[in-house]
Every structure is written in structure tokens, then in C-alpha cells.
Length: 174
View (cartoon, rainbow, N blue to C red):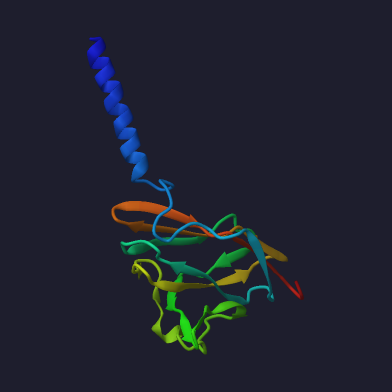
């Protein structure tokens, strides 16, 4: 009887370890971890959508990463467009430029915008860096959000990458 209880306890513990290794938060995946904490401010009129193209998703691993969900954490007084995009990085003279932030959305004049693809279901291949781009709109006097959260899968595991930059949107200068 005691041997059965011990065996059941060992099997339960093994199942919990296996489940935690394959679930969100089970470690840092191929897209890495967040950078240094920071904040960005967009001077934007109420109900005007501006571009948020600050985040670059870099796959430093050996397996492809597939984006499953993109959202703003703790958003108040602002909303995100229903679609997020993966856009190639613009390479010029050895440098690379991400689309950036704060101007009209969508950024149709950006050189690589025409090569965008939906972020949800999009794949970041090993060694590849793609720009994550979406629109944000202020819906109150001041809009605030925590960092962007990206849920993705790689090698049968699910990971959540929470970027480190929070956002403020308000009328006038920042």
C-alpha cells in the first residue's frame, strides 16, 4: 500500500515537471528574453492610430518560432489594432532599421512594408530578425500600457516573451 502511494506521488511529480517544461513560462525560448526596461511616449490625437514598430523579434535558437498571440499588457485608455504584422528589417550600409514608432498607421511608405505578413501564424526562422508592427490608438485623455506580450511556439513548447518597454499616449508633447 505504501509502495503504491509512493509510486503515485513520484508519477504525479514527474507529470507536473513534464507539464511545466512544455507550458508558458517554462524558460527562455529561441526569441530570448526582454531587454532593459524603458518607456516610450507617443503624442497622438484621440482616436488617431499610430504605428508601434519598436520591437524586433530575433531568433537566436536552432528551431523556428511561430507567433500565436500578440497583445499589450495592462492597456488602459488605448487599444491595439486587431492585426499585428511581421515585417522584414530594412538593411542599408551594414545597419538595420526597424519601422519605429509614432507616425501614421499603416506605415505604407516604409520600404519593407509591402513584404509584411500577419504576425499570428508567422514564423521567425533561426538566425532571422523580423520587425513586429501594429497600430495603437488612444481612446482616453491619456493612454497607458505595459509591454507587448508575444506568445509563440517552438519545438513543441509554448513561450511568452514580454518585451520591456511600456507605452504612454497623450495629446500634445510628451
